[in-house]
Image (cartoon, rainbow over all chains, first blue to last red; front, top):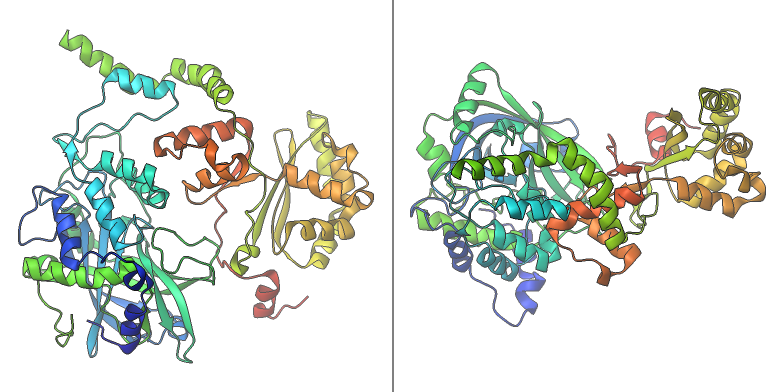
Length: 360
Length: 236
């Protein structure tokens, strides 16, 4: 875990934590709120992004990366990485083909430590603060769901309103209705809810783009600090399954095994540089497409890890596991994730980061 | 009865893709909702912003309907461009803020698509100063164009005319359509119901048939013409 002075200063100066009269929810509250959204949550597993697969590979920085960030993994040498791809749901039941956000957590193994980069297929988050997060997850509690009647669908069509999608085969409950209600009452959540509602299922974990939605501050060798956001772009391109076909529950892990047996899979790491006026501390707002975008390197995935218990279940990532050259921004959600991820790790008995030196 | 109910469900599920439903939507539902919930057309061009990255590499998508909607009319437009090629290229070099520019004929429209840096009105002002006569030749062939030429004598009117023919740029983020509707209609006139967002888009496209989808891809966003040329060492 990173315990750089800059990171600690950033957290201490956090405005939301200081200024709101009511106390912010604790890390335990945040984790429990997610668990409560998935009634079939299995103790000892992740509360969200429960189903995943661990993959190995390496990262090679681009020639220009070091001129923007002095962090070790942008130095140009080949850096071993561990990646965990996941489905977003907190249910222990695998539904690869369902409409769901996917995750890509990457650990860069450095000479004297490690750093993590956590990303997902949505390009923005649902809320700005931990209090909003509690309200959002409360709204997202699962409710019984059934197929809309044909008369309701006809009524929707007459209003030029796309009918609600039918539940997936076997699906009896969903949080979609609650998230929609929340979004209609809270415009900040609308973009993420709208995108999540039609995000679909990728044909492969290696054919999706993943966004680390929070802002980080990178420092170059001359000490110049820049606000940035990272994203992984698949070299194979983005492609989803056909939404008109019945979803397949279990194919993503077999697909990546087969894919990597034949050929490595690659991702470009893109870094977008923010400008004054951009939403540095608000993960619900994507930055404009006009910002300077730098290719920071290429990730090459070579094989699915043999020990999946270690590589997919016990491994614990944390967006605050940072190294010299990268600092967190004052984003309240990013701040909350530091302790929430650690709380989640403890609850499920995950492996503490061997490089944390006891820091939380 | 169960069989009939299942048939009806399947029929309704497939209905949006049937010709009858497409006909009803196009000629009944859209006009009805356009009447019931009137929508104002969004203004063309990029959104206003004071941030530097938003003020380089603007897209201009100018769609100008030709008066003569025949092959002869389109050929006249093509000739107007061809006859002034040197003037256009020299003018673009002198303006100095244009990344790319091209004229295109699409159907019965002469179109100018360009990528430029800086303020829109200054961009058009520069054009009038450098290739106003070319614009006059082209705009003279376009519906309503006679009211704004010669451009050098009708600068402000000409700028407004060009702006009116520049396409609305739908935001890169889907829900920003709500923001745009608020901007032209007022916050109280919209519901911000996510399930009605598709209808909002349909009704905007009803009053604004030609739009730019998103702000466009940029290989090297955030850099001006001047910076690119300086980096390559090719000066002016």
